[in-house]
Image (cartoon, rainbow, N blue to C red):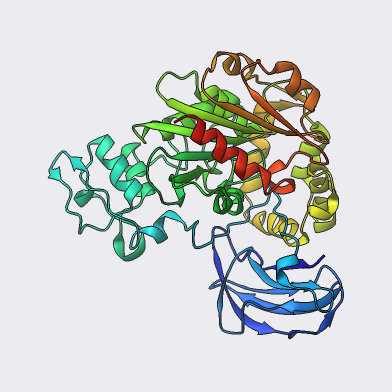
Length: 430
């Protein structure tokens, strides 16, 4: 089956890259390690290597095109094979891999095209001509803030969510304590669906999944403290993570659906007990917090890996089939660590939530108390959080989907099924 060679990560939170060189054409034979293209951002150039052997059967981008990060740059397969037969590219959850699709643009990019939301604030009705993203208008209205008095950092001076959040919490959105930056991955109407990533990841890991869900709801995500854009946030234990996320979501002034992976799933469950959030549904993917065990060797090895080979060896433990882990994603994770603050920040969080092979927190009681629609998706081959402990902790009203030949990343290894289950859970809440 054909395989996709992806447009590589080109920088922290960048979603596009310009194709400046193509070293192959349709019908060319390539082998593993061949240089097939060069792409660049405003900051750097990246050489793209083939990680498999075969014939180039598709070249959706040409020299001079602006391509989307982590979309196929080309497909390699057998002579005569079509792109429709190509296997979907795998996306590894703990990589810092910003990607975008036409249906999953960053919040700032939606300012010009999204339908404006007219909101009443302290100074009266907001002028719809004022440049601001829909979610920035919504949060500003809930906080009683005048958008006209907020300096915008978005395109052409548009006010985006981080501008409102920074004002609302005195500028403590990414350092110290306080709220976190909440980004819109897909615009929509109705109750937002908020995605919370797991340990070692960031919000961008959700982008490929969001594009496949097919709901018309707003899709939003944030970086947990110690991760991505929140690496400078001071929270370093489970209670601190929950509090930071809770403060952020409270700004939405309404109901939310929560989707969490691993550590993020435990945070999502704990949020249901805060009393200040209306959590309409929960979708928990390979959830932590339901048992005592965690693969402490993975946590230590993942944080300590300094070379591509070492990092790849540890990241393969996340999946049932190591072939589903695309090499470009390992490189993206390693490239993100050029930010010298990232690994120390994640290590600080790891010390606060894990001790050796033990989870220092539990969300089991909160899950028993939650009576809304809840779906748990877990892999039978999960080497990080044992399925048997998840099974033992689940109350009878929770739907459990046990997936064969799937490890700790069901959203990657069952990329067609997981979006369907998320959509079904959200819709079941009415």
